[in-house]
Length: 469
Image 1 (cartoon, rainbow, N blue to C red):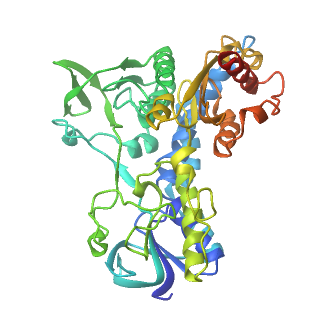
Image 2: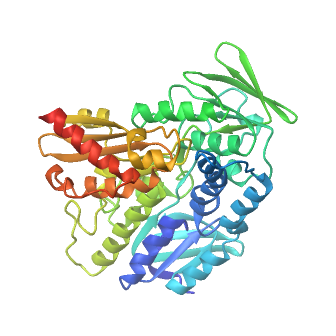
Image 3: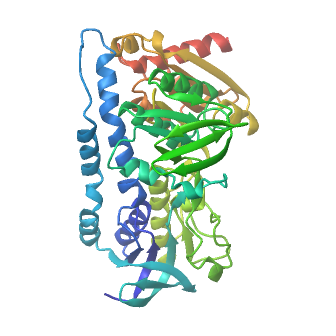
Protein backbone atom coordinates (compact mmCIF):
# COMPACT_ATOMS: atom_id res chain seq x y z
CA UNK A 1 0.00 0.00 0.00
CA UNK A 2 1.15 3.50 -0.85
CA UNK A 3 1.44 6.33 1.65
CA UNK A 4 0.37 8.87 -0.97
CA UNK A 5 -3.12 9.13 -2.45
CA UNK A 6 -5.17 11.69 -4.33
CA UNK A 7 -7.77 11.64 -1.54
CA UNK A 8 -7.65 10.66 2.12
CA UNK A 9 -10.99 10.13 3.87
CA UNK A 10 -11.23 10.19 7.66
CA UNK A 11 -14.18 7.97 8.59
CA UNK A 12 -15.43 4.79 6.93
CA UNK A 13 -19.18 5.11 7.36
CA UNK A 14 -21.55 5.32 4.39
CA UNK A 15 -20.62 8.96 3.84
CA UNK A 16 -16.88 8.32 3.75
CA UNK A 17 -17.42 5.29 1.53
CA UNK A 18 -19.39 7.37 -0.96
CA UNK A 19 -16.90 10.25 -1.03
CA UNK A 20 -14.09 7.80 -1.78
CA UNK A 21 -16.14 5.87 -4.34
CA UNK A 22 -17.12 8.96 -6.33
CA UNK A 23 -13.51 10.16 -6.35
CA UNK A 24 -12.27 6.76 -7.54
CA UNK A 25 -14.94 6.69 -10.25
CA UNK A 26 -13.59 10.10 -11.26
CA UNK A 27 -10.15 8.62 -11.80
CA UNK A 28 -8.50 9.36 -8.43
CA UNK A 29 -6.89 7.10 -5.84
CA UNK A 30 -8.41 7.06 -2.36
CA UNK A 31 -7.84 5.61 1.09
CA UNK A 32 -10.23 5.45 4.04
CA UNK A 33 -8.97 5.71 7.62
CA UNK A 34 -11.32 4.04 10.12
CA UNK A 35 -10.83 3.29 13.81
CA UNK A 36 -13.97 1.16 14.31
CA UNK A 37 -16.14 -0.76 11.84
CA UNK A 38 -16.25 0.04 8.15
CA UNK A 39 -19.87 0.90 7.48
CA UNK A 40 -20.15 3.25 10.44
CA UNK A 41 -22.96 4.19 12.77
CA UNK A 42 -25.79 3.58 10.32
CA UNK A 43 -24.85 -0.03 9.63
CA UNK A 44 -24.27 -1.17 13.20
CA UNK A 45 -25.84 1.23 15.74
CA UNK A 46 -28.41 3.41 13.99
CA UNK A 47 -30.50 3.13 10.82
CA UNK A 48 -30.32 -0.58 10.08
CA UNK A 49 -30.51 -2.15 13.55
CA UNK A 50 -33.06 0.37 14.82
CA UNK A 51 -35.44 -0.25 11.91
CA UNK A 52 -34.96 -4.01 12.34
CA UNK A 53 -35.97 -3.66 16.00
CA UNK A 54 -39.07 -1.70 15.00
CA UNK A 55 -40.30 -3.70 12.04
CA UNK A 56 -41.61 -6.90 13.63
CA UNK A 57 -43.93 -5.16 16.09
CA UNK A 58 -44.98 -2.70 13.39
CA UNK A 59 -45.96 -5.54 11.06
CA UNK A 60 -47.91 -7.25 13.85
CA UNK A 61 -49.79 -4.02 14.70
CA UNK A 62 -50.58 -3.46 11.03
CA UNK A 63 -52.11 -6.94 10.74
CA UNK A 64 -54.09 -6.54 13.95
CA UNK A 65 -55.56 -3.23 12.72
CA UNK A 66 -57.50 -5.04 10.01
CA UNK A 67 -60.69 -6.83 11.02
CA UNK A 68 -60.56 -10.55 10.37
CA UNK A 69 -57.04 -10.95 11.75
CA UNK A 70 -56.90 -12.59 15.15
CA UNK A 71 -54.09 -13.66 17.42
CA UNK A 72 -50.44 -13.15 16.67
CA UNK A 73 -47.54 -12.75 19.06
CA UNK A 74 -44.07 -11.31 19.06
CA UNK A 75 -40.97 -13.33 19.94
CA UNK A 76 -38.44 -10.82 21.34
CA UNK A 77 -35.52 -13.24 21.06
CA UNK A 78 -36.19 -13.73 17.35
CA UNK A 79 -36.55 -9.97 16.87
CA UNK A 80 -33.13 -9.44 18.43
CA UNK A 81 -31.66 -12.22 16.29
CA UNK A 82 -33.11 -10.64 13.15
CA UNK A 83 -31.65 -7.29 14.25
CA UNK A 84 -28.24 -8.96 14.69
CA UNK A 85 -28.37 -10.24 11.13
CA UNK A 86 -29.05 -6.75 9.76
CA UNK A 87 -26.08 -5.45 11.76
CA UNK A 88 -23.98 -8.24 10.21
CA UNK A 89 -23.32 -9.45 13.76
CA UNK A 90 -21.08 -6.38 14.09
CA UNK A 91 -18.58 -7.70 11.57
CA UNK A 92 -17.45 -5.43 8.75
CA UNK A 93 -16.03 -8.17 6.52
CA UNK A 94 -18.65 -7.50 3.85
CA UNK A 95 -17.99 -3.78 3.86
CA UNK A 96 -14.25 -4.34 3.57
CA UNK A 97 -14.87 -6.66 0.62
CA UNK A 98 -16.85 -3.86 -1.02
CA UNK A 99 -13.98 -1.38 -0.50
CA UNK A 100 -11.62 -3.83 -2.17
CA UNK A 101 -13.97 -4.30 -5.11
CA UNK A 102 -14.30 -0.52 -5.49
CA UNK A 103 -10.54 0.03 -5.53
CA UNK A 104 -10.47 1.90 -2.22
CA UNK A 105 -7.67 1.23 0.26
CA UNK A 106 -8.29 0.95 4.02
CA UNK A 107 -6.05 1.88 6.92
CA UNK A 108 -7.35 0.90 10.34
CA UNK A 109 -6.56 3.22 13.21
CA UNK A 110 -7.19 6.69 14.59
CA UNK A 111 -6.34 9.40 12.07
CA UNK A 112 -5.47 13.03 12.79
CA UNK A 113 -4.57 15.92 10.52
CA UNK A 114 -0.85 16.48 11.04
CA UNK A 115 -0.09 18.97 8.28
CA UNK A 116 -1.39 20.35 5.01
CA UNK A 117 -2.85 17.40 3.07
CA UNK A 118 -1.33 15.06 5.67
CA UNK A 119 -2.89 12.55 8.07
CA UNK A 120 -1.05 10.57 10.74
CA UNK A 121 -2.72 7.31 11.69
CA UNK A 122 -2.15 5.56 15.03
CA UNK A 123 -2.35 1.89 14.05
CA UNK A 124 -1.76 -1.29 16.02
CA UNK A 125 1.71 -1.39 14.46
CA UNK A 126 2.67 2.20 15.22
CA UNK A 127 2.19 5.46 13.35
CA UNK A 128 1.69 5.75 9.63
CA UNK A 129 1.80 9.07 7.74
CA UNK A 130 -0.48 9.45 4.71
CA UNK A 131 -0.24 12.33 2.26
CA UNK A 132 -2.90 13.53 -0.17
CA UNK A 133 -2.10 15.00 -3.56
CA UNK A 134 -5.45 16.79 -3.74
CA UNK A 135 -7.76 16.59 -0.72
CA UNK A 136 -8.61 15.29 2.72
CA UNK A 137 -12.29 14.67 3.50
CA UNK A 138 -13.49 14.46 7.11
CA UNK A 139 -16.50 12.15 7.52
CA UNK A 140 -16.16 11.20 11.18
CA UNK A 141 -19.84 11.68 12.07
CA UNK A 142 -21.23 12.38 15.52
CA UNK A 143 -21.49 10.91 19.01
CA UNK A 144 -24.45 10.93 21.36
CA UNK A 145 -24.50 14.02 23.56
CA UNK A 146 -24.66 13.41 27.31
CA UNK A 147 -26.17 16.43 29.08
CA UNK A 148 -24.81 17.58 32.41
CA UNK A 149 -27.69 16.23 34.50
CA UNK A 150 -26.42 15.45 38.02
CA UNK A 151 -25.58 11.76 38.35
CA UNK A 152 -26.37 10.89 34.73
CA UNK A 153 -22.84 10.12 33.53
CA UNK A 154 -22.23 7.85 36.56
CA UNK A 155 -25.50 5.97 36.02
CA UNK A 156 -24.11 4.09 33.01
CA UNK A 157 -26.83 5.37 30.67
CA UNK A 158 -27.65 3.83 27.35
CA UNK A 159 -27.11 5.92 24.26
CA UNK A 160 -28.48 5.05 20.84
CA UNK A 161 -25.62 2.55 20.48
CA UNK A 162 -26.63 0.49 23.51
CA UNK A 163 -30.33 0.76 22.66
CA UNK A 164 -29.87 -0.60 19.14
CA UNK A 165 -27.38 -3.34 20.07
CA UNK A 166 -28.83 -4.58 23.39
CA UNK A 167 -28.86 -8.36 23.79
CA UNK A 168 -31.81 -8.37 26.17
CA UNK A 169 -35.07 -6.48 26.54
CA UNK A 170 -35.11 -4.58 29.85
CA UNK A 171 -38.14 -4.94 32.06
CA UNK A 172 -38.45 -1.17 32.09
CA UNK A 173 -36.79 1.67 30.22
CA UNK A 174 -36.78 5.40 30.90
CA UNK A 175 -35.92 7.61 27.92
CA UNK A 176 -34.71 11.18 28.30
CA UNK A 177 -35.44 13.11 25.13
CA UNK A 178 -38.38 13.53 22.77
CA UNK A 179 -36.57 13.64 19.42
CA UNK A 180 -36.23 11.00 16.73
CA UNK A 181 -34.13 8.53 18.74
CA UNK A 182 -36.36 8.92 21.79
CA UNK A 183 -39.66 8.24 20.05
CA UNK A 184 -38.30 5.44 17.84
CA UNK A 185 -36.76 3.59 20.77
CA UNK A 186 -39.89 4.15 22.87
CA UNK A 187 -41.88 2.56 20.03
CA UNK A 188 -39.42 -0.32 19.67
CA UNK A 189 -39.08 -1.28 23.32
CA UNK A 190 -42.77 -0.86 24.10
CA UNK A 191 -43.41 -3.26 21.23
CA UNK A 192 -40.89 -5.69 22.68
CA UNK A 193 -42.60 -5.69 26.07
CA UNK A 194 -40.70 -3.14 28.16
CA UNK A 195 -42.50 -0.71 30.43
CA UNK A 196 -41.40 2.58 28.87
CA UNK A 197 -41.40 6.11 30.23
CA UNK A 198 -40.52 8.95 27.85
CA UNK A 199 -39.44 12.26 29.39
CA UNK A 200 -39.35 15.32 27.11
CA UNK A 201 -38.51 18.92 28.03
CA UNK A 202 -41.22 20.19 25.66
CA UNK A 203 -43.22 18.34 23.01
CA UNK A 204 -42.15 15.49 20.76
CA UNK A 205 -40.34 15.91 17.44
CA UNK A 206 -39.92 19.63 17.97
CA UNK A 207 -38.35 20.35 14.58
CA UNK A 208 -41.39 18.98 12.71
CA UNK A 209 -44.96 20.21 12.36
CA UNK A 210 -46.61 20.33 15.82
CA UNK A 211 -49.42 17.96 14.84
CA UNK A 212 -46.87 15.23 14.13
CA UNK A 213 -45.58 15.25 17.70
CA UNK A 214 -49.13 15.32 19.05
CA UNK A 215 -50.16 12.27 17.02
CA UNK A 216 -47.01 10.42 18.06
CA UNK A 217 -47.64 11.21 21.74
CA UNK A 218 -51.12 9.72 21.38
CA UNK A 219 -49.74 6.74 19.48
CA UNK A 220 -47.09 6.01 22.11
CA UNK A 221 -49.66 6.24 24.88
CA UNK A 222 -51.72 3.73 22.92
CA UNK A 223 -48.74 1.37 23.16
CA UNK A 224 -48.64 1.85 26.92
CA UNK A 225 -45.80 4.37 27.05
CA UNK A 226 -45.91 6.86 29.91
CA UNK A 227 -45.27 10.09 27.96
CA UNK A 228 -44.16 13.00 30.13
CA UNK A 229 -44.20 16.28 28.18
CA UNK A 230 -42.80 19.61 29.39
CA UNK A 231 -40.87 17.67 32.03
CA UNK A 232 -37.33 18.38 33.20
CA UNK A 233 -34.95 15.65 34.36
CA UNK A 234 -33.15 17.06 37.40
CA UNK A 235 -31.09 14.05 38.59
CA UNK A 236 -30.29 10.40 37.85
CA UNK A 237 -28.80 7.73 40.08
CA UNK A 238 -28.07 4.05 39.70
CA UNK A 239 -28.30 1.52 42.51
CA UNK A 240 -27.17 -1.85 41.19
CA UNK A 241 -29.58 -2.99 38.50
CA UNK A 242 -32.02 -0.12 39.06
CA UNK A 243 -31.96 3.48 37.89
CA UNK A 244 -33.91 6.31 39.47
CA UNK A 245 -34.73 9.41 37.44
CA UNK A 246 -35.85 12.53 39.29
CA UNK A 247 -38.26 14.67 37.31
CA UNK A 248 -39.27 18.23 38.08
CA UNK A 249 -39.43 19.12 41.75
CA UNK A 250 -38.77 15.63 43.05
CA UNK A 251 -40.96 12.97 41.43
CA UNK A 252 -38.94 9.77 41.02
CA UNK A 253 -39.25 7.27 38.17
CA UNK A 254 -37.68 3.84 38.55
CA UNK A 255 -36.39 1.86 35.58
CA UNK A 256 -34.05 -1.00 34.72
CA UNK A 257 -32.19 1.16 32.19
CA UNK A 258 -32.10 4.81 31.17
CA UNK A 259 -31.56 5.91 27.58
CA UNK A 260 -30.20 9.38 26.84
CA UNK A 261 -31.56 10.69 23.54
CA UNK A 262 -30.93 14.43 23.76
CA UNK A 263 -29.01 15.06 20.56
CA UNK A 264 -25.66 14.53 18.88
CA UNK A 265 -22.26 16.22 18.97
CA UNK A 266 -19.69 16.28 16.13
CA UNK A 267 -16.85 13.79 16.41
CA UNK A 268 -14.12 16.39 15.84
CA UNK A 269 -12.42 16.64 19.23
CA UNK A 270 -9.25 14.71 18.43
CA UNK A 271 -8.69 14.78 14.68
CA UNK A 272 -6.18 17.63 14.46
CA UNK A 273 -8.50 20.39 13.26
CA UNK A 274 -6.17 23.01 14.72
CA UNK A 275 -3.78 22.26 11.85
CA UNK A 276 -6.34 23.85 9.53
CA UNK A 277 -7.13 26.70 11.92
CA UNK A 278 -10.43 25.12 13.01
CA UNK A 279 -11.79 24.61 16.52
CA UNK A 280 -11.85 20.99 17.75
CA UNK A 281 -15.14 19.69 19.10
CA UNK A 282 -17.34 21.80 16.85
CA UNK A 283 -19.17 21.23 13.58
CA UNK A 284 -17.12 22.14 10.54
CA UNK A 285 -18.52 24.89 8.33
CA UNK A 286 -18.46 24.14 4.60
CA UNK A 287 -19.68 25.60 1.33
CA UNK A 288 -22.19 23.74 -0.83
CA UNK A 289 -19.44 21.60 -2.39
CA UNK A 290 -18.53 20.51 1.18
CA UNK A 291 -15.18 22.33 1.05
CA UNK A 292 -14.00 24.26 4.11
CA UNK A 293 -13.83 27.97 3.26
CA UNK A 294 -10.25 29.22 3.24
CA UNK A 295 -8.75 25.69 3.27
CA UNK A 296 -8.86 24.59 -0.36
CA UNK A 297 -7.71 21.01 0.33
CA UNK A 298 -10.09 20.17 3.20
CA UNK A 299 -13.68 18.90 2.99
CA UNK A 300 -16.18 17.94 5.71
CA UNK A 301 -19.03 15.67 4.64
CA UNK A 302 -22.04 14.24 6.45
CA UNK A 303 -23.13 14.75 10.05
CA UNK A 304 -19.78 16.30 10.97
CA UNK A 305 -20.72 19.52 9.15
CA UNK A 306 -24.04 19.88 10.99
CA UNK A 307 -26.09 20.62 7.86
CA UNK A 308 -28.52 17.68 7.88
CA UNK A 309 -27.85 14.81 10.29
CA UNK A 310 -29.32 12.04 8.15
CA UNK A 311 -27.57 9.16 6.41
CA UNK A 312 -29.23 9.78 3.06
CA UNK A 313 -28.32 13.47 3.13
CA UNK A 314 -24.74 12.59 4.03
CA UNK A 315 -24.53 10.23 1.06
CA UNK A 316 -26.03 12.95 -1.14
CA UNK A 317 -23.37 15.38 0.08
CA UNK A 318 -20.73 12.71 -0.51
CA UNK A 319 -21.66 12.35 -4.16
CA UNK A 320 -21.34 16.10 -4.65
CA UNK A 321 -18.06 16.30 -2.73
CA UNK A 322 -16.43 13.30 -4.40
CA UNK A 323 -17.35 14.58 -7.85
CA UNK A 324 -16.12 18.09 -6.95
CA UNK A 325 -12.77 16.77 -5.66
CA UNK A 326 -12.25 14.79 -8.88
CA UNK A 327 -13.24 17.74 -11.06
CA UNK A 328 -10.97 20.17 -9.22
CA UNK A 329 -8.08 17.74 -9.56
CA UNK A 330 -8.45 18.17 -13.34
CA UNK A 331 -9.00 21.95 -13.13
CA UNK A 332 -12.49 21.53 -14.54
CA UNK A 333 -15.18 24.18 -14.17
CA UNK A 334 -17.62 23.03 -11.49
CA UNK A 335 -21.37 22.88 -11.92
CA UNK A 336 -21.74 24.66 -8.59
CA UNK A 337 -24.86 26.74 -9.12
CA UNK A 338 -28.02 25.73 -7.24
CA UNK A 339 -29.05 22.17 -8.10
CA UNK A 340 -25.81 21.61 -10.00
CA UNK A 341 -23.90 18.33 -9.98
CA UNK A 342 -21.24 19.48 -7.51
CA UNK A 343 -23.43 21.09 -4.85
CA UNK A 344 -25.76 19.87 -2.11
CA UNK A 345 -28.61 22.32 -2.68
CA UNK A 346 -31.26 20.02 -1.18
CA UNK A 347 -29.69 20.50 2.26
CA UNK A 348 -31.34 23.92 2.36
CA UNK A 349 -34.76 23.30 0.91
CA UNK A 350 -35.68 19.67 0.31
CA UNK A 351 -34.47 17.39 3.11
CA UNK A 352 -36.67 14.27 3.46
CA UNK A 353 -36.97 12.46 6.77
CA UNK A 354 -38.94 9.52 8.12
CA UNK A 355 -39.43 8.86 11.82
CA UNK A 356 -40.31 5.19 12.29
CA UNK A 357 -42.48 5.57 15.36
CA UNK A 358 -46.14 5.02 16.22
CA UNK A 359 -47.51 6.40 13.95
CA UNK A 360 -44.89 7.03 11.27
CA UNK A 361 -44.00 10.61 10.40
CA UNK A 362 -42.59 11.55 7.00
CA UNK A 363 -41.66 15.07 5.96
CA UNK A 364 -39.71 17.03 3.38
CA UNK A 365 -38.84 20.69 3.04
CA UNK A 366 -40.01 23.49 5.30
CA UNK A 367 -42.57 23.49 8.08
CA UNK A 368 -45.11 26.30 8.16
CA UNK A 369 -43.18 28.13 10.88
CA UNK A 370 -39.87 27.74 9.03
CA UNK A 371 -41.41 28.97 5.78
CA UNK A 372 -42.82 32.07 7.44
CA UNK A 373 -39.50 32.72 9.19
CA UNK A 374 -37.80 32.55 5.79
CA UNK A 375 -40.10 35.30 4.53
CA UNK A 376 -42.36 33.24 2.27
CA UNK A 377 -46.02 34.05 1.68
CA UNK A 378 -47.67 30.70 2.28
CA UNK A 379 -50.92 28.79 2.39
CA UNK A 380 -51.17 25.87 4.82
CA UNK A 381 -53.34 23.01 3.59
CA UNK A 382 -54.30 20.18 5.96
CA UNK A 383 -56.07 16.93 5.19
CA UNK A 384 -57.43 14.10 7.34
CA UNK A 385 -55.56 11.02 6.08
CA UNK A 386 -58.16 8.78 7.66
CA UNK A 387 -60.83 10.17 5.33
CA UNK A 388 -59.00 8.92 2.23
CA UNK A 389 -60.52 5.74 0.79
CA UNK A 390 -57.17 3.98 0.51
CA UNK A 391 -56.42 4.67 4.16
CA UNK A 392 -59.66 3.15 5.40
CA UNK A 393 -58.88 0.02 3.39
CA UNK A 394 -55.33 -0.06 4.69
CA UNK A 395 -56.35 -0.14 8.36
CA UNK A 396 -59.64 -0.03 10.22
CA UNK A 397 -59.86 3.19 12.18
CA UNK A 398 -56.88 4.68 10.32
CA UNK A 399 -55.81 7.92 11.99
CA UNK A 400 -53.46 10.37 10.35
CA UNK A 401 -52.95 13.81 8.92
CA UNK A 402 -51.24 15.42 5.94
CA UNK A 403 -50.09 19.00 5.44
CA UNK A 404 -48.62 20.82 2.48
CA UNK A 405 -47.07 24.29 2.53
CA UNK A 406 -47.67 26.27 -0.66
CA UNK A 407 -45.59 29.26 -1.73
CA UNK A 408 -48.49 31.39 -2.96
CA UNK A 409 -46.28 33.73 -4.99
CA UNK A 410 -44.71 30.97 -7.11
CA UNK A 411 -47.47 28.36 -6.71
CA UNK A 412 -45.04 25.59 -5.72
CA UNK A 413 -44.69 23.39 -2.66
CA UNK A 414 -42.23 24.36 0.07
CA UNK A 415 -42.90 21.44 2.38
CA UNK A 416 -45.07 18.38 2.99
CA UNK A 417 -45.65 16.37 6.18
CA UNK A 418 -47.52 13.10 6.63
CA UNK A 419 -48.28 11.40 9.94
CA UNK A 420 -50.03 8.04 10.02
CA UNK A 421 -49.49 4.30 9.57
CA UNK A 422 -47.13 3.42 6.72
CA UNK A 423 -46.75 6.97 5.35
CA UNK A 424 -43.02 6.54 4.69
CA UNK A 425 -43.68 5.33 1.15
CA UNK A 426 -45.62 8.52 0.36
CA UNK A 427 -42.54 10.65 0.90
CA UNK A 428 -40.62 10.30 -2.35
CA UNK A 429 -43.44 11.80 -4.41
CA UNK A 430 -43.47 14.78 -2.05
CA UNK A 431 -39.69 15.07 -2.23
CA UNK A 432 -39.78 15.18 -6.03
CA UNK A 433 -42.49 17.85 -5.93
CA UNK A 434 -40.54 20.03 -3.50
CA UNK A 435 -37.06 19.54 -4.99
CA UNK A 436 -38.24 20.01 -8.59
CA UNK A 437 -40.53 22.92 -7.65
CA UNK A 438 -43.35 21.33 -9.62
CA UNK A 439 -46.07 23.95 -10.23
CA UNK A 440 -49.40 23.31 -8.55
CA UNK A 441 -51.03 23.51 -11.98
CA UNK A 442 -48.92 20.56 -13.15
CA UNK A 443 -49.44 18.54 -9.95
CA UNK A 444 -53.12 18.35 -10.85
CA UNK A 445 -52.07 16.13 -13.76
CA UNK A 446 -50.21 13.67 -11.49
CA UNK A 447 -53.30 11.54 -10.90
CA UNK A 448 -53.12 9.28 -7.82
CA UNK A 449 -54.34 5.72 -8.29
CA UNK A 450 -57.58 4.79 -6.56
CA UNK A 451 -57.99 3.43 -3.92
CA UNK A 452 -54.58 4.15 -2.41
CA UNK A 453 -53.38 6.33 0.44
CA UNK A 454 -51.72 8.47 -2.24
CA UNK A 455 -55.17 9.84 -3.06
CA UNK A 456 -54.42 12.29 -0.27
CA UNK A 457 -52.65 14.36 -2.96
CA UNK A 458 -55.96 14.91 -4.73
CA UNK A 459 -57.63 15.91 -1.46
CA UNK A 460 -54.84 18.38 -0.65
CA UNK A 461 -55.02 19.98 -4.10
CA UNK A 462 -58.81 20.18 -3.97
CA UNK A 463 -58.68 21.89 -0.60
CA UNK A 464 -55.98 24.32 -1.77
CA UNK A 465 -58.18 25.19 -4.74
CA UNK A 466 -61.09 25.97 -2.44
CA UNK A 467 -58.95 27.94 0.04
CA UNK A 468 -57.26 30.04 -2.65
CA UNK A 469 -60.39 30.65 -4.74
